[in-house]
Image (cartoon, rainbow, N blue to C red):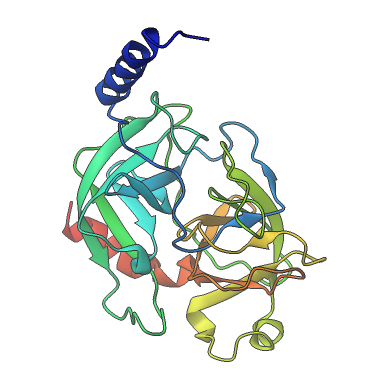
Length: 259
């Protein structure tokens, strides 16, 4: 262990290293939406499209890279600007690629009271450099149906009481469930534009801290984790997602008009 005289020097060197990497001041833990409870560590590099959005040096939401210059996330995460981190399963990684973003495009029908049409595009200040660990995911060509097997991935706490924060991206396997089944838990579903997913045993799912995280079903981006629900106790209720396939026209038109 370093002696008292060396400790200030070591702290200074660490601070300079973080600053040179653009990482100084980033903090991982912010309760802003959904979180993966009782999930597993995702296979390394299995989600190269997943990004972390930081605001005021704190993790705000997750998102997905759908174009070299565009990130898709949820509208309730809107801020004036972000630092978008990509290319790492770690929430804080000095080696990760980070790009500033100051332009956001919220869906025109978004309602911040009901969170209907909770979807937003964020334009990067410069295009992402694609690599095996930074890649885009295509917008869905069709909507997947009930009982489809999916994976939801995200960061933030992994226990119901918030005691455990993961260092790596966490995954949970879920299935899309019917509108009628989900309606039993949530009365005000916007049927066409939302979907629900749950685990068969209700033991693992999103809960609070991973808003904007992707629901990937058979290789297709089908959902973005919606607003959070409290309390987070087992068995969990189904989780509501913004149904990405219903917004393809708006997404494509918005990116085309603002590129």
